[in-house]
Structure formats: structure tokens, C-alpha cells
Image (cartoon, rainbow, N blue to C red; front, top):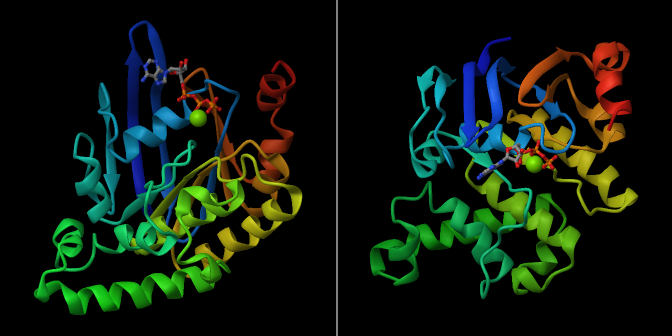
Length: 252
Ligand SMILES: Nc1ncnc2c1ncn2[C@@H]1O[C@H](COP(=O)(O)OP(=O)(O)OP(=O)(O)O)[C@@H](O)[C@H]1O
Ligand SMILES: [Mg+2]
């Protein structure tokens, strides 16, 4: 399997804290890869480096063969990398549909703001964007929420809207930072099948998650961080048997 993402020697410090320390790995195209590790291990920092929210101190990130380290989040998103955030990050005062359309406007000719101005040239794109956003909401089973204000919804529903907005970008690679946090057992199980469907539709998934039963169920490969360093990588079975990983988790 080809690597959609190739990371080499990636490092990032905050003051004295080495949050990510010489980390190298590949994410294979068409797979679900999970990134696990104790609180503060550097998982979110690694995601922020990949998506351009912060710049690495050193190391390289090849996405589809293109060096993306140091590029802006917008530029990286337009190359086909989408993400959701550990803290829900929806736009206030906008409907669910509008939030999802923000993701789509990365792809239509007119930008989001010219779209907001309702210029005649953008009307056709806008109708297309609306249909496309509705289709994504239907796929995720929340089309009945389309005209509700996004930030007024229940927590689990807001997480699904975030996922819809990321999918609207038509990403090649989707980064999910703790998508099951705050979800109940039923919602978590549904999320698991949604993530597998996303993978089966051709989108590569890289997921940070603390829910081990979910991780073990859906992942093709798992990578473990501890104090910013990669301590293990392998199949779910290999990771479950790995002594160092077990030690890190029992010590938590
Ligand atoms: N912007 C920042 N400024 C200073 N320190 C930071 C910053 N972001 C992260 N850190 C530190 O870097 C380390 C890694 O944090 P990070 O959020 O990446 O961990 P994590 O693995 O995502 O943890 P969690 O499971 O709790 O989400 C922590 O010690 C954290 O305090
Ligand atoms: Mg985190």
C-alpha cells in the first residue's frame, strides 16, 4: 500500500516541553490508522503540525508526495487534508447546513465570503453546494437537523456536524481528534461504523482516540506516543501484546 502521508523526524517544543520528539511514520492510503497515548503524550500537537496549525521545529511531512511542513492550514486543506478538533469548533449563529457548506466552499470556485455576499456568479455554485451538503448530512443520518443552529444541538450531534464539515472538503486524508469523547456507548458504536464506511469510500483516516475498544475494533494500524516519542506501531493485536505499551497504560 502506498503512503498518503510520510512523516520523518518531526519535532516540536514549547519552551522546555518537547511535545513531539523525532517522530517518523507512514499512513497508508485507504487505511484507518489510530494514534494513541496517555494525556499530554503529544497527539494533538502532532495533528496540529500535520494540518499546519503550528510549524515544526524540524522534520518533514510529505502529503501525497508534496512537502507540506510550514504551509498554512488553508493551503494544506486545499491539498486534501481535513480535520476535526478535540474541542468542538463550529460557527456560532449559523445553521448545520451553513457550517457544512463552509467545508464545501474550499472546492467551489467562489470563496465562502463572496458566497455570503450572494453575488450572481456564485448562485449556481451555491445551489450545488447546498445539495452536496444535504447529501452528506443524509449519509450521516442528520439531515433533519439541517436548518437548526449548529451550536444549539446536543453534544453528539455537534460532533457529527463537525465530521460532515470535514467530509465536505472531499479529503484524501481525514484527521479525527478524539471523535468519541463525550459520546455514549450507542453513539460510539455508530461512529465506529461511520468511520469504517468513510474508509471504505476511499478516504484515509488517521484518528486520535482514548476509547480502546473503538480503536481496536476499527484500526488497521496503531501507533503509540509517550512523552512525545513513538514507542510502538503495529496491528491492534501487536499493540495489545506490546509490553512497553501495556506498561505506559498501567502506569497512567
Ligand atoms: N500551545 C502550547 N503551548 C505550550 N505547551 C503546549 C501547547 N500545546 C501543547 N502543549 C504541551 O505539549 C504536551 C503535549 O500536549 P498535547 O495536547 O499534544 O497532548 P495530547 O496527547 O493531545 O493529550 P490529550 O490526550 O490530553 O489530548 C503537553 O505537555 C502540553 O501541555
Ligand atoms: Mg489531545
